[in-house]
Length: 291
Image (tube, rainbow, N blue to C red; front, side, top):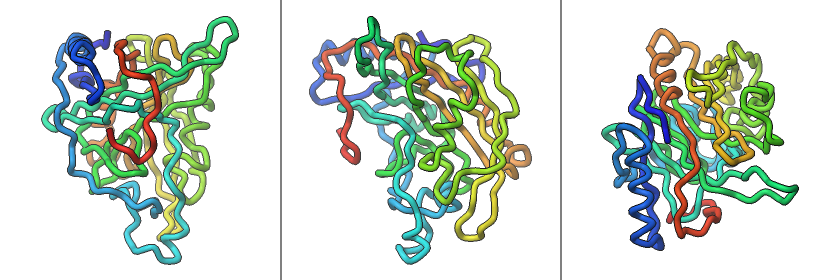
């Protein structure tokens, strides 16, 4: 089950599918309601975030999710969709309950192979509590963001861990996904001044926490923008990949505007667990297609 959080209500939700049987719907609803102390069904998909363009200026993407000008010379210099490693399950939707802020997504993760056989994919429910709206559009997987300030959080999935325990994996393994040249923060160059300030396990011993600082490059001003982030990483039971939640804010907002406290609450609420078994086929959703 999902342990409850002292600072957040704990993530919960229901992934909907037109082909799920009545028994499957009941099983999933029952599972989600009993997994934390504050379970509520996600019946409404938040529609407040605007659809973003496929190319972007890092300044405006971090704040607005899109490039600020039409596709001119500088707009065309942008890269495509960031690679987070997240694969959504076909038949599911990324949902955020507007009143509680609880977010849930059903993703596919490679299982831990037995007997040398090739690994298969298994469904995992990942959830967290977010004060920010859900980001929608073709360039997003699972992300919430404040469009005015650029504060936000997103899910990412690493390469396979070779059955290592989360506490034994070097910090560089997580950073390789986060700061790759196709990563979330690497639109106009790999982030610089990357520092791991702290690395520790959470109180439950289920999640590895990394506290980071780094700088991203602004295309419009050609200056580096300092940023702080906290990463929570876990290996869901029976899987062989790390599922991470990364929450960040500009260094200026980190303490002066209270972003640090908010982000710590978001990180504390994060859980990723095996999804309940149903009659749904386990297959990936096609990119750009809604269920």
